[in-house]
Length: 413
Ligand code: GLA
Image 1 (cartoon, rainbow, N blue to C red):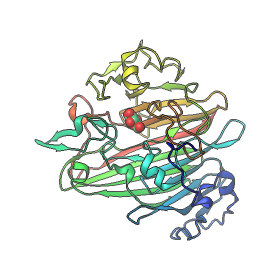
Image 2 (tube, helix red, strand yellow):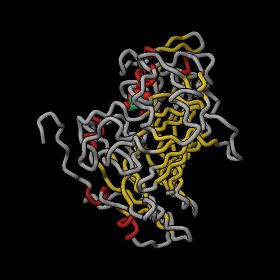
Image 3 (tube, helix red, strand yellow):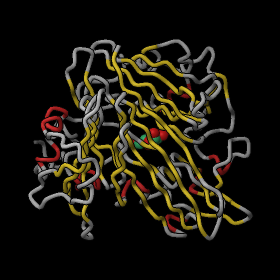
Image 4 (tube, rainbow, N blue to C red):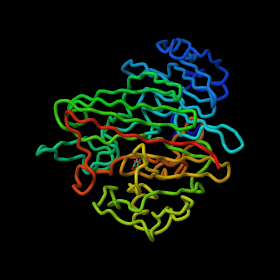
C-alpha cells in the first residue's frame, strides 16, 4: 500500500461485518420475537441474534455485535437487520448506516453503500458516510445565525462556513440504541441528547432517529426531536452514499435519475444558497424526465462549476400522499437493475454526486473511492435556512415537536 494512504485496520469484528443476507438468513428464526432483545453482543464479536420472526414475505431479524471503542472508552456496536432480502448494518457511532445489501435483478446481493469496516477510519476519514446529520444538515453561512435577537456562532469546518452541525456534529458521537420491532418491520431507534451550547447551538436537543426495514424492502427513517430551555434550529438528515452497481464498483454517472423537483436553490462559490428559488427548466438541473446523472455533469453551467458537479438543494414538488410523503426522486442503474425511490415529507433534498471523493483512502471493500463513485440524496430543509427568511423555517421552540419521515425504497427494474 503506498505510504500516503492511511493504513486500514484489521477487521476486528469479522463475525458481525461479514454478515451478509445469506449469513443473516442462516441464523434460524425461533419466533421468540423480542424475548432476547436485551442481550448484548458477546466478547468474541460474534453477533447475537436479538429477535427473529418468520413471515410470509420474509424473515425479520436483528443482531448486535461490538464494533469498536472510542479513544475515550465508549463502546460502539453494530446492529444488523434483515428481511431476508435486504440487509442493513448500522453503527451506534453517528447512528450510521454502514452497509446496505440488496439484490440486483438476477438476485445477486451486494453492498451498495459506501463505508468502512472499522471505527478509527470512520472517526478519522469519513465524509459523513451513512451518518445521521445534526443539529443542522448542510451549510450555515459563516456558521452564524440570529434567533430571537441573539446571534449564535457554530464552529466553521467547510471553508468559511459550518457544514453538517460544525466540527463535531451528530455524525461523530455515540448514540444510544434500542431495538424496535413489530410484525411488519425491524430496526433500531437511536437517541442522542445534545446539551445546550454544544457546537454553539442553543437549547438542549433530544433527538431520536428510528431506522426500520419492512418486508417490502423499505428503509424508513423517522426523525423526532424536542428542545428544552431555549429555542433552537434543527435540520436532521442521513448522509448515506449509494452506488447501485455496488460500493467501489465505478461511478454513478450511468445511473438514471428522475427528480420530482421543479425548482432548486442556486449557490455561491462557497455553496451557500443565494436565496433565489430558481426553475430547473432548461438547465442541467432538470431531471423531470429520467436522465443519466453523468450526461450534463461536466458541462459549463456556472452552478455545476461551483459544485464541481451536483451538490445542490432541490425543491420537491407535488402534493403529499395520505402519509404526508412525496416522491423526491428515483434512481435506476440499468446494467444490473437496482432501483431506489425516495419519499419524504421534507421540503428539499440535497443531491450530491460525490464530487469531493478523491481517491485518498480505501473503503470497506478495500477500494479507493474517487470522484463520482457514489451519490448522496439528503432529504432536508434548505441549506442556510436560518439566514433566509424566504425559506421554510427550521426553528424549533420548547413545547414543539420536530417530526419528519423519509423512506428509501429498494427494488429492481
Ligand atoms: C454534503 C455537502 C457536500 C459535501 C458532502 C460531504 O452533501 O453539500 O458539499 O460536503 O456533504 O462530503
